[in-house]
Figure 1 (tube, helix red, strand yellow):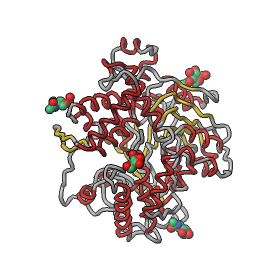
Figure 2 (spheres, helix red, strand yellow):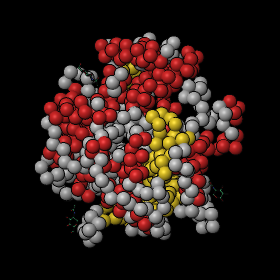
Figure 3 (tube, helix red, strand yellow):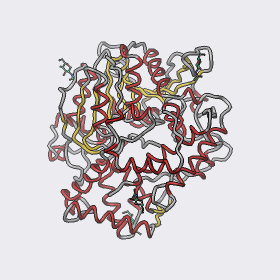
Figure 4 (cartoon, helix red, strand yellow):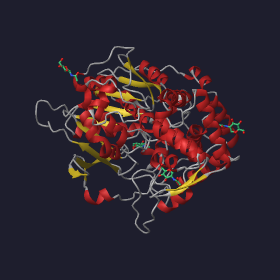
Length: 547
Ligand SMILES: *[C@@H]1O[C@H](CO)[C@@H](O)[C@H](O)[C@H]1NC(C)=O
Ligand SMILES: *[C@@H]1O[C@H](CO)[C@@H](O)[C@H](O)[C@H]1NC(C)=O
Ligand SMILES: *[C@@H]1O[C@H](CO)[C@@H](O)[C@H](O)[C@H]1NC(C)=O
Ligand SMILES: *[C@@H]1O[C@H](CO)[C@@H](O)[C@H](O)[C@H]1NC(C)=O
């Protein structure tokens, strides 16, 4: 079956880009909105930590907007850490920086949710550190294309291809508006400084402010573009670099976004296969063959297209319609271990006219307009759009060209090798560890293999699982390689494929406190802490969808 929601995401992105860049000399204005953190934290060129959230510390680091113009304007980067309890001892091994992906994902949010679990996974020897990239979240100035959060909410965020007969044209038309709004908010000319190269330079500043020379880093999804960019700029400043869920950076910088879908259908097929294997007791959407499950989903999709289902929950309400169904399936492909059981239940209920469980896959609390207080939520898409537009080559598609692009995505295996340009090889001061899942719906493992070639000495570790980035699935094997790499710098042998621990449909959550559950899943008891940390991470942190 086709995957319109994925296409929506990619095409929507492309359309935004085409729009924003159409705006002649791209000068997008940025509202330097104050976030609540600003009131508390002073910006400094040193890291002055203040306690924040639970067990965490926050600081604001001042960096130049333009590294070629150090006396010009500055940006303030929101930094957060789960501090190592071993700081000051011989066992302390410095900070590991994280980027959650996006572009435009909030590292502050990521560590607020998952910092303690990452520390458990990797060892107490490290500070677990992240930051909101310039333009994003709590960092200032912050990109916003709208005057108020209420305006953003009323404009809405997406259209889905084929949800209406004019779906693609609507996406294109809305992108014209987004671009115009971006251009309208353009007094300060700062947008052109919000790009991946400058963010890589900011990371070096964060490392140096920690008193270290070289970086230790784990980047997910778009975070692999950021990590690879850092490696190209500062090859002799690398101590550890784990790039997980690898984006083909060449494709990204060319604003093609054409390679992301290669393995998406494979991930959906795993839903059908594993639901069948799980049987009717563990998978409520069960049918006597994977093909029959796939057909049942097609039938349900058609039925939902014709008859959307109303839902009221305790915290919000809305429709499960074609678009919502597609987006929820897409979200589930991202995190199959966390969401396939809920998806199966939700689809089974939806057949019976109850959309609640399906709706809850992507449920957000209702928007509440606190009129007059300009405190937007931490994560909005504008920063990510700005970053990918500033990074990428200019796109000026008409709606017809967008149609052609879409057709290209549908034949995506044909996009390809011809585009690979010869790249200059980079020799990093420590070899890079690349990680790819065998069925990643957003970043096929082919991206990891291609990128690794540009960095001699690298190793690609494959994880035999569906989902986006390694932490979407439980693998003690992968975790041990990552931990050994950070602790000792050791790499797996080339060609290693890590298995995952346990099936998706278990009726129980992997890493449950009960050791008998773990024994039943074949997990060695002494790895119980890794299993539990991974389970906590899957609950608390999800690599953000691109926009
Ligand atoms: C959208 O609809 C068109 C025409 O009905 C069809 O050819 C196409 O395959 C559909 N696209 C997707 C992604 O479902
Ligand atoms: C950054 O500063 C340099 C030196 O003043 C200038 O040439 C360059 O145009 C600036 N870059 C941007 C994006 O403004
Ligand atoms: C729909 O399903 C939810 C979740 O299982 C349940 O709580 C709710 O009572 C159901 N609603 C109806 C109308 O049956
Ligand atoms: C790091 O190396 C030491 C010494 O060889 C070893 O004892 C330890 O288990 C290794 N740590 C990891 C996490 O692999």
